[in-house]
Image 1: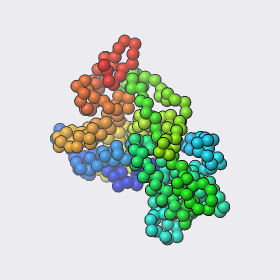
Image 2: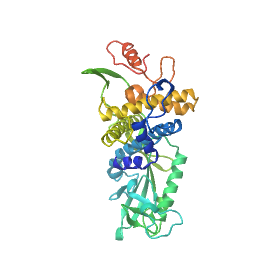
Image 3: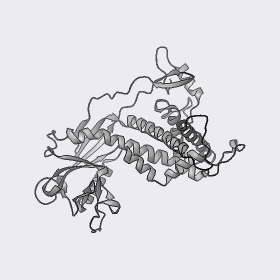
Image 4: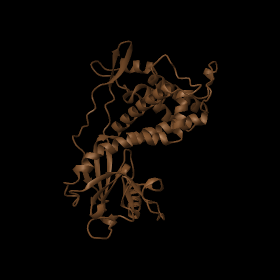
Length: 370
């Protein structure tokens, strides 16, 4: 996950996240009696930061999880399948190791370093003389829904980029153009396998129970997560796509991505507490990680009510509510929560108590009691 974290921290909006944890945002009307921090986020900056958490951070963690789970199949599982002839003894190269030459850039070294561009999510290659690589398959890994038309357009773009030349681990494997497809000395893009990796569609069990832990009460899933299938599945479609369906579902990946984002923001809180900026207002009556996450939850709550007051985009408000509910109460309860009137709103402790009280005898509580 280190490459994901480096990518997150390289974004300009990461500075907004650190400011949000350390300084908060402009005080809402109901907090005007408190002292304002020295460097609060404006309303627009707060909205941009919330979009960054949901639209970039969580999405990046989710995508990386899919890439990690796809590795066993891509490295070992495809080689023995008779529907994919020619892949025995080949090598899988993940996308974070690949850089491609930009269009019309003929400079020496242009297929590596900052002058280059990202390539596909992965390729399957056979190494030849002087480490020259022949690309036999291009891989797209999607943790969310995507249309076949869009996927084919993306793979066409990746094949064109690879054909211009690419590097692997900064080594100029094919600096002046790649060999695409099987056999011969010429390229044959039509012979390159197009492999799509997607998650399964099953949903997580949403039941839960409450467990006392000292003075606190923990929300515990009803049972460990176990995919209903034992292995990834491979199919070949009429469009010529090779589809690898992971045994893990989009729902499971999304839940895990929220958990990773939650843990990461706690670590940001710890880092800010260890190296405080002048005027920072992190709480000192709890651990640094708890203080950082507490401020995130508080600011998400502020953002929700500001968006309601300003009649902001309802889709943005829905995303903000989802972030708050999942970060505060976990995926099993927070994801897609609606009250008894079918309204999407922030969860309260009373809602959890109602869920527990409404469960049937001998059953676990559910976030959507009947």
